[in-house]
Image (cartoon, rainbow, N blue to C red; front, side):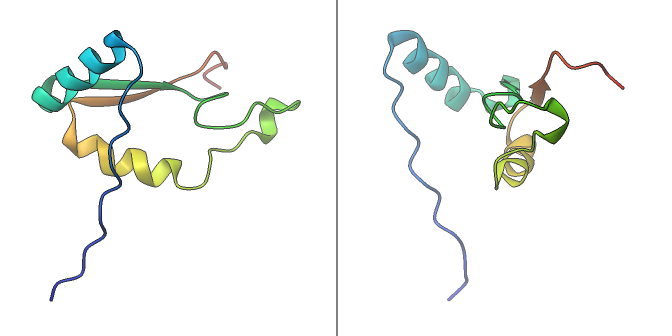
Length: 81
């Protein structure tokens, strides 16, 4: 038997727009761009932004997602430096 990890189920969006968006991503992942905010989404909001760190598993999840869609983007209002 080969070893593989089971994929968690995809949560069902609660709004019509969310369901439509998920349907579009699943129908054409090669055209999907997944964009996520860093502060408050991938990392908790903390008093000192220099101490913000991505949630455990976030980087690995995005790395696994990236080859399955057209693009993955992390959005932030922080200076590029």
